Structure formats: structure tokens, C-alpha cells
Image 1 (cartoon, rainbow, N blue to C red):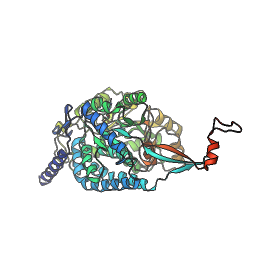
Image 2 (cartoon, protein in one colour):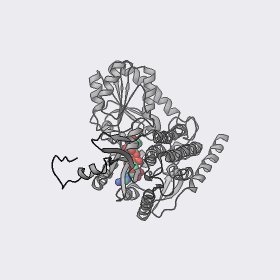
Image 3 (cartoon, rainbow, N blue to C red):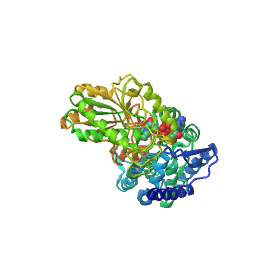
Image 4 (cartoon, protein in one colour):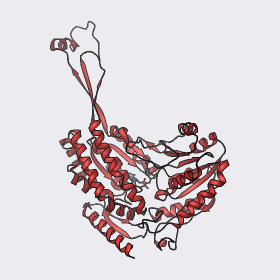
Length: 516
Ligand code: NAD
């Protein structure tokens, strides 16, 4: 097939370039597989304890030298803008690598990566506009407040949006002047490793950015516990966030944790039905449901329950029929990340007491779309389960796959109560055409991100993060730039010398003396 031959040349080109950037570490080797075929894409050497110690010491030396940390913000801004342009040019290649290492469709990966330069441009722009302030202190004291970088910071990232999440974290950290250590997921490290070469080309000085591949409990924890690390920023499961949090807590360093979710989608009877069906399918099945804000718990108001469900199932069938080679631009949905994850999901679905209306088992056979062989890959069809209890594991726990549970509700209060009946609080969706209700319900939902009549919208300026078990801290926006810096008060006594002599002569005359 001409199209397939072209794709394969493209993939090999992309991967050949990627190998150029594979650094030579000394730890154990691990394999990166294509989850759609099981094929080995790359053998990566993980960073050993010595590699971690070396990289962090190097990052600290770079930080203390001021080569990046003390550059005027406008100079850092220019480098980030260069980096945005270099990244832009590499997107076609990177999208192929991303598809191959995650099994997500090429259509999704092009759309996602196409937006990444915006993060670098946004923080480059903030550097040109952020201003210091003067505190309103009294008397002859002039107190100006600067934001200064933290030092060497660690970023631990997951497999599901490999480059997106890394860039979301690296952009503010670099903008603020820190030295940055990134540990990408062992399941999908290739595009993040590529990024190191681009950063160098853009003018990020040596030592300022290190990408250290490896396993979490090995390389990851070695980085996190290192005494020179001043902040840890992790995107991971809640379990991982808790394990890292206990180390971070005892080292007394800053912590941002973007963790798991089980987003509710509340569909009111006054919603535009077509928009709600399309939007819910998008919420639930993009990335094969492997997003932290995936619409995993669908709540439908009684009056439209049957109608919505019938239309939703039609949509699910269309998605299922459209599945094929993830590299096919027409493919609707890709794989989940690994056969291990596939089995975990299958187990959870088998244990449910709910009614499985669609899907429920790993896929085999060939694709209706393009004849692709599903049997070697980790394909799980879009799965819909009703009659679910709030005690069911599938209601309570993150499955991180294309599996939704559906429940009906009668009125607003019940909808809100069900939505909040969850240990997580990351994303939520509300579908209604009643403006007052939209505001009222959004105010009541316990989630850090609440979409109304849309889902999955993300922007460098829009705060992103969770409540409850979904984490602490926020990505994006001015808040994230601030979280990568600390304030420093500089207090200057502007009094004349004769006044100063008297003012700080604490042990001289005590008459009328005031402290502070
Ligand atoms: P994971 O927890 O298995 O791994 C994430 C990263 O943490 C990997 O790099 C891993 O190697 C590392 N890690 C694991 N244990 C570690 C340890 N003890 N010390 C140091 N590092 C360790 O998560 P995953 O399967 O890659 O990603 C899926 C999870 O991430 C889901 O729970 C999802 O909800 C969450 N997630 C959250 C957001 C968000 O914005 N809140 C976004 C994407 C994904």
C-alpha cells in the first residue's frame, strides 16, 4: 500500500533522528514498545544513581554560575521563543514517535503537539511583562520584592501525554531561571529525550536541562530524594504522588502534584443533545480514555436518559468501527499503553456488577477500517456500563482506559451529589443550556477544572490542577511561574547617616524605641 510505505519511511526517519539524542547512561536497560504491534522501538539505558548525582551536581553548578538563573528575563524569553520555533518544525516527526510509543492516533498526536509551542511562547511573553513590586513599608525603609528561582527542580512525568506534560512543566521552570531535571515515563520517554537536543539548539546553556530516563522506583526516587532538589513537580497516579510526597515532605521542598481523576459529566435535560453526545464521547474516549480528566462517570438526567443513551451508543459504535492502525490519519481511537495495563483494565471490567452494554474485552481480529491486526496490540474497545453502584470499583477507582460508567439522576441536587461522591476532584463537565444553572452547578462541583458545554480545553494561561485526591498546586498561568520562584524582600534604609546611626543604635538610648 503506497500510503503505508510512505508512513514507514517517515517513522524510520523520525526514529533514526531520535536515536541521535539517546544519551549514554549507565543504569539498567529498558525497552520502549509500540503498543499497537508489540514491536520494540528503542532500547534505552536508564540513569543510574551515579548519573543522577552527576546530573544534579552539574545542574546545581550551572544554577550557581548564573549562566541562566541570573540572565535578564528578556534574554531567557528569547531562548524560549527560539525553542518554540524549533519545536514547531519538529512536530511532524515528533507526532509519529509519540503515536508509536503511546499507541495513540496520529490525528490526536498532531493536534496535541501542534499546540505545544504556545506554552513556550506564553512563558516567554510573561517574562517580558512580569514586574517586581515595592511593599508599603513605613518610614525610611524601601522594600522591593523580587522573584528569584528556586535552584535545581525535578519533574516526573507520565506516559499518557509524554511531551505535552513535560513541556507544560519545563516552560515555567526554565522561564523562572531554574535548572531542570526531567524524568519521563519509562513507557514513553522518546519525545522528551528528543527535546533535550532542541533545547540545546535553542540556546539553553549546558547543565540547565537534563532529561534522565529510567524507572520510577529507581531513577525517579533517586532524583526526588536528592538533597539539592528544591522542588518536585510530578504528574502521576495518586499512589505515586503519595509515595513521592512523603520524601518531599521530609526534605522540606516545594511540591506540585497533578494526580489521578474520575471526572463526572453531568448532562441536564435542557442540554443540546447532539453537542452533549459528541462532547461526552470526546471527553471519554480521546487518548483511549487515558487522560486524567477523562469523562469516566456519566450522569444523565432522567428525562433524557433513554434518548441520550441510544445516541451515545450509536457514537460508541462509530468509534469502534473506526479503529485501526494508529498511524492511519482516519483511525478513531488507538491502544492503551501496554498489555499489562490491558489486563488490569480487563480485570476491573470483569469484576463489575454493572451491565456492560458495549465493549468490555480486549480486541482481536482485524480492523474494518484498514485491515490492521488488533491481536498483537493492546486494543480495548470503547466500553459502556450502566446500572452501576457507587460502591463499585469502577465508580470509585481510576481505570485509565476507554471505559465509562453511566448513572441517572433526577434533579440538580442529586446530580451534584453524585458528581462529588468521589475521592478525586480534577476535571468535571456540565452540559446545560440554562446559564444560571451552569454557574450554580459549577460553583458546587469539587473539581479544579470545570467545563460547561465542552471538555478537555487546556491553555497555557488556564490554571490546571486538582482538589481532594487529585493533587496539590497548579500548572499553567502566572501561578505556575510563581510556583517555580520564591519572593525575596530587599529592604534598604534610605535615611541619612545621622538618622541611621540613631535608628539602629538599639543598645544606646532606649527612649521611644520601636522595633520593626
Ligand atoms: P505512574 O504513577 O505510574 O508514573 C508516573 C511517573 O512517575 C513515571 O515517570 C514513573 O516512572 C514515576 N514514578 C513512579 N513511581 C515513582 C516513585 N516511587 N518515585 C519517583 N517516581 C515514580 O503514572 P502513569 O501510569 O505514567 O500515568 C497515569 C497517571 O497519571 C494517572 O493516574 C493519571 O490520572 C495521572 N495523570 C494526571 C494528570 C493531571 O494533570 N492531574 C495528567 C496526566 C496523567
